[in-house]
Image (cartoon, rainbow, N blue to C red; front, side, top):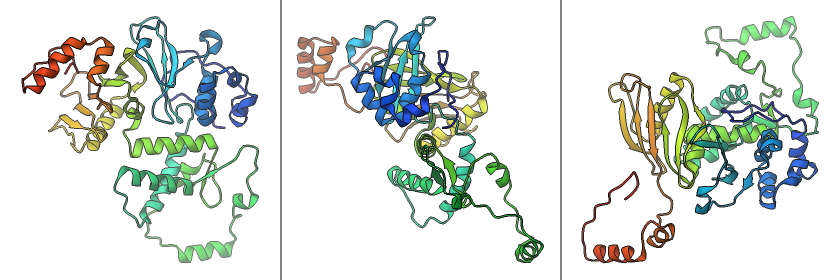
Length: 375
C-alpha cells in the first residue's frame, strides 16, 4: 500500500496505525471495524478509504464519530459535533468541532485524501497522451468523457492484488544491447527528431511493467481514477462541496481555507484551501473555463453558472483584490423546499402560508426582505 498522506490540513494529531492494509483486505479481522455501528460497517466495507481515514482519526481521544445516513435539522444544536455522513458516493463528510473557533471543521473524505499519488500522476498522464492521440471516438458529454477516461486509465495501469506476485514475464526487461544491436539502432534512428523531454525522469521512481503500465495497489487505483475524473472533468477540489446537498454557499476569500455555509451546521471552515497565489490563480482560470466565461486581466470579474447550475462570482488577480483571486459559489438546490416544509421548520405559520397562497393566486407582487437566499 502507498504511504498515506493527507491532501489537506487535518485538525487533529494523526493516530498511528500499523495494520491498516490488513484491515482493508479483511475488515472483519479489524478491531476498529468491529466497533463501528451497522451502517458505518456497510460504508467502510464498500468504501475502503473511509476505513483508512478512521484508522488515522484518534478515536481513543475523541471517540468513534457518529454516523448518519441522512442529516436531520434537529442536529443543528449539537454541541462539539463529531459525525460523518455520506455526500455523493464515494465521498463522505466529517463534521468535527473546533474548541477555539466559532466555525467547526468540514473534512471531505475522498478516495485520494490519504494517498500520495503525486509521483504517479505525471507518468499516468504521459501514457494517456499516446492513447488519446489514437482515440477515434469524440466524447462530448461529461458522462461520455468520464467513461472514456476510466477505460483508458485501466489500460495504462496494472492493479497489483495484495499477496499476489507479479508474473515475471511482465517484468522482463531487455538486457544491455550488444554492439550489433547498437549499430542497427543508430541506422534506424531519426537523428533530426526531437527527443521527448523528461520521460526517463518521469518514470524513474514509478514502478511499471516492461510494457509501460504503471503498477498500483487497488487503493491507489481508486485514488487515481477518482482524482483524474474529479480534476479533468469535474470541478477539481470543489467537487466534494458541489456534491454535498447540505451546502448552500462556498467561499474562497484568497489564500487560506475554503469556507462554506451549511444548511444545518451553518458556517464551517474546510481543511481544503490554497496556500499559493499561482495555484489559486490557475484554479480560478479553470473555474471560469468550466463556466464558459473566460477570465483575463482585461476581464477580471466574472459572473457565471457552473455545469450543475450553481452561480459563481470570480475575481481574478491582486490587481483587483488586495487578497488576490477569490470566488463565491451559490449552490443550486436539487429539491426546492415546499411551503409545508417551511412551516415545519418554523419559518412561517400555516396562516401566513395560506395568506401568501391567496396573494399569489390573485397575481399580487411580493417583496422578500432578508439575508441571502431569503427569497
